[in-house]
Image 1 (spheres, rainbow, N blue to C red):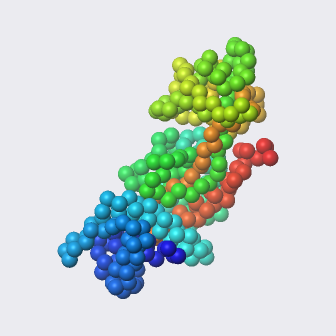
Image 2 (cartoon, rainbow, N blue to C red):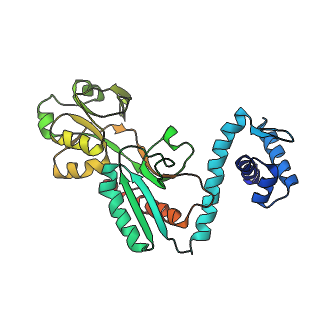
Image 3 (cartoon, rainbow, N blue to C red):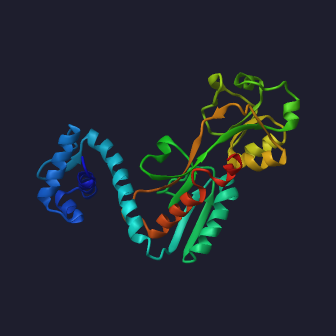
Length: 303
């Protein structure tokens, strides 16, 4: 398929539950709506809509396809609206949710600079290590590390890669024998995130990949909690470099097994698909993407 027209028509038909209303919404003829749907079903080789003279509904395949199409069409519309709104004045309220540690260290300073550049915008920030439900909590934008199912049905813009490191306090490292390879973590007290079922740490290094099932006597539901426990000498912690940076610089924590890489994560700004997404949200998300980028400030020392 050479363009998004058929996908946009399909989404409009499902959203309006009508070929006629979809034609009005897309500003095309009903005959062209029918043609788009027929071409789309022919292209994918499967029926997407059950339709009769009185009823219209999605097939099981159509339901799955619609979810992906809605996101794709919304992202395409976002790109177009972003250009259209560049010259318009952004104003109004943005409700933002972010994790405690990242919000305190990096997002709040970024928001301060953003508001200085955009005085007609107001921002309400919720700091929480719980991934907000954008519908029930009335949040406009979630800024945090995420992947997989949490991003389903959302438009997610990548803001920055997030490296992770293994760290421990010097006092803890003096209490155990030297850590030379990933299997040595099995004899360590590892500090874990509460509510995370997966207790396996994946490390890649010169001798290949290791998947270590770790254990420990301390858990916390925030990155700050894990960091403070590590500084207190309770054990080994895995944490993003945006948290670890200042502790490593001060010597309160030491990086261990530095020859091995941990799985990199991604920081996103996520929001609900909306063809008429307000300019203030587009402006804010674009600002964050430019602010953090492929080499965020917390990793600049590694250049």
